[in-house]
Amino acid sequence: MTARRVSVTRPGRWPQRAKLALVAAAPWLWFAVRDLALVDQLLDGVAIAMPLVLYCSIPMLAFAAILRRKLLVCGAMSLAAVALASIVAPWIPEAMATPVLPFRLVSANVFGGNADKPDFAKELIALDADVVITLESLSGAHELLSVAYPHTVAPRQPEGIGVYTGFAVLSATRPVEGVGVLRIVLDAPGGAIALYAAHLSRAWVTGGGKNDVVFFRHRAIVEHLLDSIRQDPLPTVLAGDLNMSDRTSKYRAVRSTLRDAMLVRWAGPTSRKLLFRPLLLRIDHIFVPKQWCAKDARRIELTGSDHDAVTATIGPC
Image 1 (cartoon, one colour):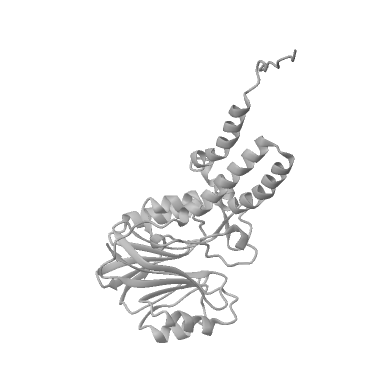
Image 2 (image 1 turned 120 degrees about the vertical axis):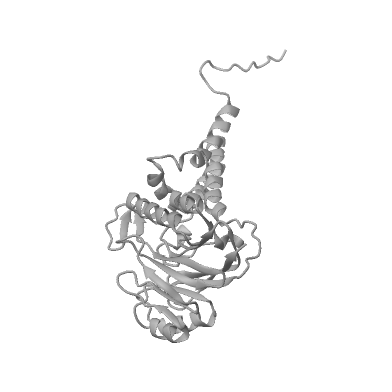
């Protein structure tokens, strides 16, 4: 007579399915905690590193599968899914109507060490945009662009922000002192608009570099900028190199006030720096008022730059 096995669950031990469910659910808590006050700025560093989390979770998943460790397989799969969702979600297009009285805007970081600035400028001029913002441009590109466009705000140290346009420039001021932002009032087709052309410092853990600030300081800069934009009496466009990943709480704060014009189609990374390419950083942006729409948004590789330029045709919906 064959003896029957009786399965006995030991007191205090969780069933396997409960463990699997807990391990699978734990990484998804990321979306619940990433914007919590006091820790959101620290977690921005984790958000920037999400592609590294994805890259590490793949070999972890393979290793767990070889060992046939269900819990580890489940955890690695869930971690990879969370990392992938964090990266891709800010790139998903949103429905927009066709803008009326539209104009085309381009923002391009020249790169201060660009040895081919004249070629860069010619490529930029060939785009035939109505408004061109350049960053880190002090010479080489400026001379050609200022000839191609009748109205110019010449770049100055330290940010090298230049604005070139066919629209009349009514004023140019600094809305936030000590921050790399110019407020340019333009006589656009639908009336005067305030263009905030920005080249913000890079947010980093230590803020020790020449152009780096700590995450807390970067958040304060963005908050001061948003305060100025909210109080602005004119329709406001914010564009430039914000050194702000679209995975961070700062990006979501900006989107609570303005619309991301690049999301008329699938977005993607704009930083082309060799060291940072694996991080898939989208740090160059065009934001418009919530009541505005966009079309024909795209990223453009220009000669000698370590950023993709961003461009979109924008206007009231």
